[in-house]
Image 1: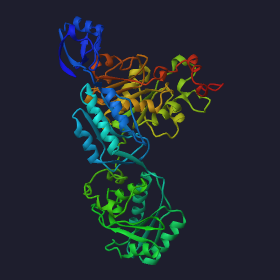
Image 2: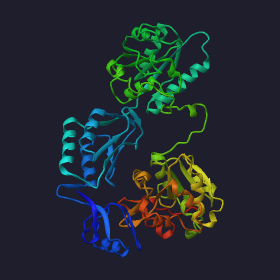
Image 3: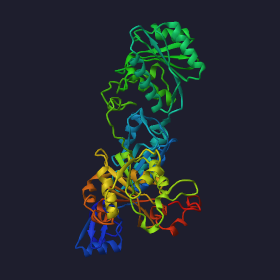
Image 4: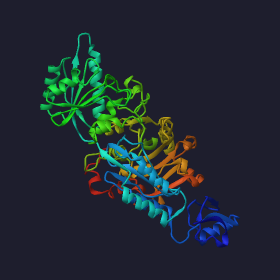
Length: 551
């Protein structure tokens, strides 16, 4: 690849290195110059252009990223579409992400031009979470370098994987000594259940008994008969030896101890064993707390179907010194009753605009029309948004606000009142933007009358959002037309808050064209809103209104 300053007369076929604004058009970085774009550059007064010209054997950045992503494909992880030389990889389900640093380092060592970055090893992730990103640094790489990386992966294997969490049933035994407060027992049960539920499991009713070998052994066997697939013992007193009361109870019940102690602090004094072929653990005292500790490491691996034998436990020292973080299943702020914002993927919130007066469908309200599936249009739209990774979901209400709220029932959304909704679309948009929590990096603005836009489509927009790389406004396109919803970086919120009238923020797209990323979703759903009776007839049959349209 030749990177240089090219005279315009020699620039046809050159990949543009920097965006250029010309009369009536913005030529974006990455554009392959043709005669028309060269003419536009000349009309703007440019004599030369900085860019790259491909040579034989060069593979364009998106094609190279797609090939590298294909080489790294594994079950349980999905890759997005290549854009600006990048492919993001997401988890298909909740599980434990595993990464082999040595193999990943070997891939990244081959060339500075091909890079793969992942989450840390042993990271618990939710469905849809981004776990890795593949980035081609220049506009093109040579075939030989890409082939070298593909050969390494073929020989050594993909350096990462996702182990889905299994739906396991957990039994907990709590032993008691005189003077042990009931609040300690209750707190231990709450913290343990939070951990289990966060991994997709369920808890049997906890059993309490005296702090002695036989009662604990009997309780363990009772929980096993009730279907427990993991057995936990929370002793009234800390375990100090593998022959102490808790471990001895596992042995008395017919089990055996495999490991006492682990190189994780807090959590050193955990005891691991087996009973009837299932894990049986004596918890360290710190497991009574919701703060991260060694039991989190162990439970994640068990739920993910991974080994928790002595060798695996003894390899947990790196990263085993835990700081006061919020990485556990029940962060400290939440345990103390403090409000904690729940942010979506990439910190993106969602706004659903549902405050309008529906004048074009009078006397009916378009968002309250019930379809043949028994849902209102606003419920259908909000359910699609909730299926995406955007959080929190803010629903802006105004006209017939109580009816909109009733139609949405108990859905986990936050309502925002647009007091001056009659002033037009901008009033609803400004009310919603003003309510986006300060922790959110951006917001995707959805229209309440677009029920065909799916959660997967929204996730495609979110995956394309990266202000640091110049993708600060993400717009969906179909056959060259820009649709809705549109994702805005926080830097544009002040501009949105001064809009007026019945117009949205579309004019900002032209003003900041160099920061716009277009995502072709291959679906006209992004162009279709349903605000007239005639338009309802074009919905898919199951989404069309029932015979009697409710007002």
